[in-house]
Image (cartoon, rainbow, N blue to C red; front, side):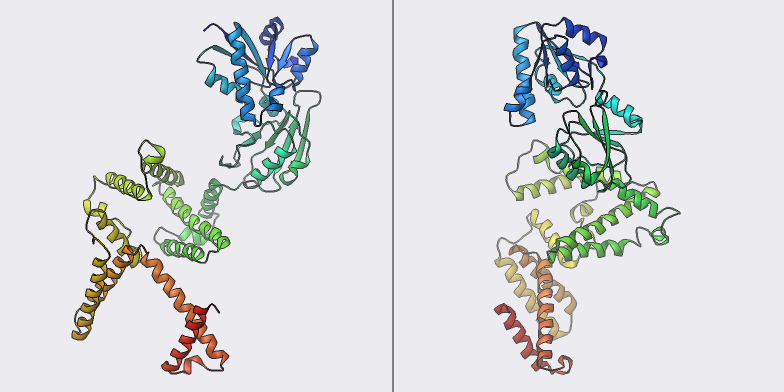
Length: 483
C-alpha cells in the first residue's frame, strides 16, 4: 500500500484534549482534512496557523447525510491517490458515532493503509458531567435509529448529533412511543469547553431547548419504559409473594379457558373492524403468552426469551425464499415450502402425529377444513367442484334415509357437514367464517323482527309461528333494501 490515511480524533473540545502524539503529527503536516470546521479544536488549530481544509461545503450541496459521508470518503480517496500520507480529523473519538470512519474502513482500507488514532470521546465528558459509570449500562443510538431499537429503559440512553430543534422534535416523538411523557432528559452542549451547558427537561418539553452541532441528548434509566421486558417484570411481580393471590393460584391448566376466551375476543374485534378494541384484545392475548412463559420459567422449563428465540428461528427457517437462496413465485409456492420444511422438521417423529398435527381444541369446522387441506396436498382430493357437490347431495340422501329408518342419524349428519366443509373449500370459502357470518345475519334479522313486532304493539313471545314468519320476512325485506 503506497499511501496512508491517518484518522485522528479531536476530542470533544479544544487542543488541550488532543493527545501529544496527534498534536505533533498535526503540526508537522502540510494540510489537514477535517470533516467539519464547526468544532472548537479545529478553530484553535486554524488560529495557530495550521492549514485545515474542511468538508463543510459538501453538507450544503448533498441532499442527505448518507450522501455527505459517501462524498467525503470519495474526496479522501482522491487525496490518497496524490500523495503518501493524508491526515483526516473528526470530532471526538474516531470510532464513536463517526459514520465516515465506518465508510473508510469499508471502502478505503482494502486499497490503502488506514491508521486510527485514539482520542478523548464526547462520552467521557458525559460520564464526567452526569456522574455515572458506564458499567451500569449504556445504549448509544443515532437520532434516526430509535424506532426499531427495542428500548428497555434499563440503560442510560445517549443520542449524539442532535443538531437542531427539528431533529430534537423527531427524537422526542420517537422516544415518547416508549418513555413516559414526563421522563427526565438531559440536553448537554459543548461539554469540555468554556461554553459547557447541561439542561434538564421533561421529555414532552425537550424540543423547547436550544441545539447546535455540539448537542447530545441523554436519558437516565427509567423503569416505566414500555417494553416486553417491563411486561414480563410486571408478570413476575404478580406471581411473587408480594403479588396477587389470584395470579399465584393459576396453572397452565387453569389458564386454558382464559386463553380461549381472549383468542375469541380478538376474533370478535377483527370481525367488528374495531381497531381500538383489537389493540386492547391483542394486549390481553399477549398477556396470556407472558403468563404461561412465567409459569414455565418458575419451573425451570423455559422462559419468554426461549419463546422469542424459538419463533424467530422458525420464521427464518421456514422462509428460505426471504432469508436464504430459495426461489418461490407465488403465495401457493410459499405454503408448499412452509409445509415441506414443517414435515422435514417432524420427519423423525411419528408419521400420524406429523401429518395430522392440528390442535384437538380447534373448532370442528376449522379442524375439518385443515384435515381436508392436508390430504389434498398429497393428492387425495376431487378433480373439480362436481365431486364435492355430488358428495353433498349423496350425503343429504343418506341422512334422509337415516331419519326415515331411525338408525345412524348422528353419523350421517356428521358426513353431511364434512362434505359441506369440503364444498366450501372448493369454493375458496372458509367454512368457519361462512357459518359465523350466517349466525351474525340470523341474530341481526331476529332482533329486527322483534323490533318490528314491538313497533306494532305486539308481544313477540305470544305470537304464533306463522305470524312470526310474517315479521321475519319483513325484517329480511328491510335488510335487503338497506333500511
